Length: 372
Ligand code: ZN
Ligand code: FE
Image (cartoon, rainbow, N blue to C red; front, side, top):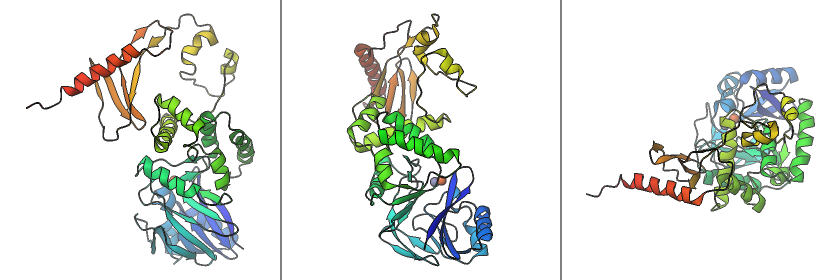
């Protein structure tokens, strides 16, 4: 009988112990100390080390564990994994020594270039997917493209709905807040938030989830559904060309919040008292122009600026600023702007101003053409 036990590490990592009797294999041991302590406390012998990708918070403990236990180290063929003994890629199958677990392998590049997933089939299928698929979220795209990440997530989404998902981090509640911002009407998201919150309040992991849960609530797996695409399109302020475009936009939306060190929570403020009741000591730009109504702040001065957003062009890695306005590239599109009008409350887009911005940009960049 195999059981899977979480060994918490660092701030929000899980090292998964696959235990069968007196033996256990560990998945993604970023730190040796908690693993050694767990083995010791439970009288368990380490039988194998399994790695999904090369990040230090997943393999940082491998060398030290290996110096105590001479066990096989399974890891991705296309990444540098310390002390790796078995280099794996899609199509391979392994029998994890000591615990009787037969796994098949998938290549799931995107978070890292050689990231792999381990999954089992049969009655009680399970999946170890590192930092690619999270509960209600997905990993950052460090070494790949949105296309690769989308295709990797699609492989995982195609596993049986009952597959238990063991991922590398406890990010579930923050991810679900984002999921709710994307799909405010999704009842499964609402129910899952209530369910997972109870677990976190008791300091219990929200994991494993299941592929079925993810299909119902994970906005990144749902990027191709009309409602989710509409939300991504509204954020990007342009029609979306494809599912990958929708996925990339969602990932950028989430990244914008994370870059700012934030988490997403959806709340509505109808009176100033609602704001005073916030636990946060600093409230930054919380209501924008809504402040006039909310606070009765008649001194508030609106500044209107028009933006034009071009299709994403990953090869554009520069920004420009000048009399013609400004442009800077983002993963979800190239931002053009440059108008500045004080005192206008009307938020209707101004097509004439927008075409002027685009025309000035065009003129500026055409100036670079070599006519010789
Ligand atoms: Zn990682
Ligand atoms: Fe990680």
